[in-house]
Image (cartoon, rainbow, N blue to C red; front, top):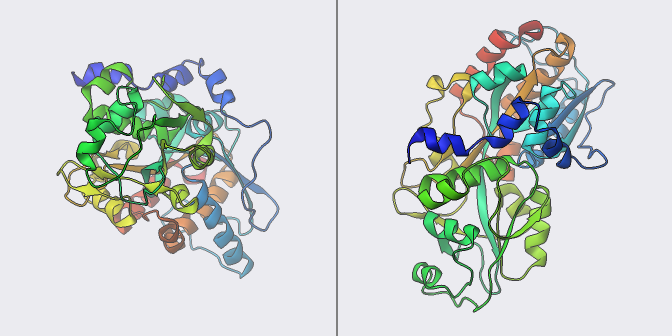
Length: 377
């Protein structure tokens, strides 16, 4: 299939959003009541919304930022576009999915949106947004099969596409047994669990499946929202984790931080080199090692199915989207938080299973702020 045909099957949710038709889909992803993240001491709130993939690290960063500010910390803002950043804002974040986060940012209803799907420069211009990465993580395939612990079960891309498309329906299927001859797998139906909200985790998972399976690319494609051929839906990565824990013989995709926190058994996946690799910060870093951010306009770059013997094949980047129409004061408040996160939040990110941005990329982000968001852009 040609690249243009592939692109025509992807991005429907974003195209609807740009056309003003994605409102219902985004609103359907928003909980009835806001979910408030950890607060940072102070008066004026920094408000964000979007990616559930990013929620664990953003919450941890908010705690660290609060302690740092309470201790009198202050950041020099040289060469970052920050002039006299506020020292004590509170922090509220709604983990409602990437699509809803993009919508909230487009409407300037929040100071920033968070998405695990990067937007192209043209789309950013239409939406009035600036975009930059803040952390890298992985999408784990998890199972709930009696006697199968973390890293024990193996999948390759075509097999995963077969399972999530409904062509492979039983754990005793010969294709599964061929990759896992040492496992005692049950003669039981596979219970597929997937996201129902507009999700960057879904986007990266389906982008990977589209790269490794022509049938998946043609029939389902890659997007924040897709028409799943089989399975039960759940809202947010937390919702998927609960569904997997409660469902025998289940399989799902979820951010690695949530998989670890919920003690779910992850799979080892075959990468482009044919090696079976477990989701780990080291394998995420291996996947990101060759990323050419210098040539990625507005940081529009994906890390799925990258080359490298130790590379995990489903790696995602968390992107922050800031409305350029927001007041300079609120932009400075948000960027001061992310300046702290990029400079001092690396250890927190690593402890949760994410990978901090490399130093060269952090410098590119700061230069981008100075060019695109200085004094409110």
